[in-house]
Length: 243
Image (tube, rainbow, N blue to C red; front, side):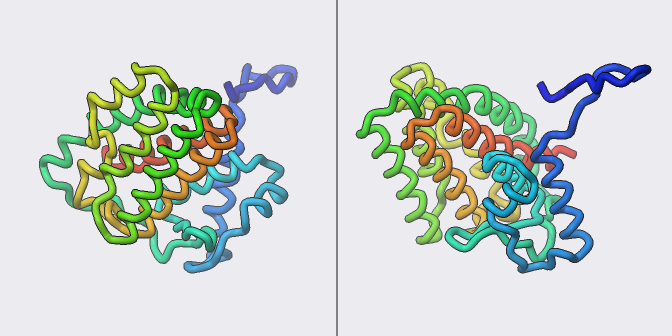
């Protein structure tokens, strides 16, 4: 819960404070729109943003994910996060099949957020060395597909299945197995800008690496937060298509 009572006499009751990540998003968005941060400019590092805003690294990463989903920034692996040349255009014509897929995609993501955030946390404290290696291998295969310019939905799905397997709870793997690679939203929207864009895919890969690092370090809360950030960013992206 992020609501709180300000305790002032005559107040109208509990007031909802903005999420810390939203405060950071709003500030960076203003800088971008005002031209203080121009296209191609590199954002401050995670550490600099943490110090400047007095927030955690998880909050910084959530804010960056939201800005990326809005098309305002582009993460570049090993280099940092940069202001995008132009906002990511979501007002694109979709095929009839893609348009029909929007509601079920949003339902799928809602379900995956509920299930996979906890799966990541459980995997973080249960995973064996072999299971950690399987997660790492799945992510490495996705990186190879990106570099080769090949479709990545199958390898992306394999990464999530490997995490489910590391829970040692068959129900997580059975649920994902019922959906198959279609659980990866971009497989249902081939005409969506960025669906096969290498820079976008590298950003997805970086989010996977945050999840992997938390699982490897056996940090359940960090794994839960990283998975949630990863899936919520995708949810925001596809929710905009429904507007």
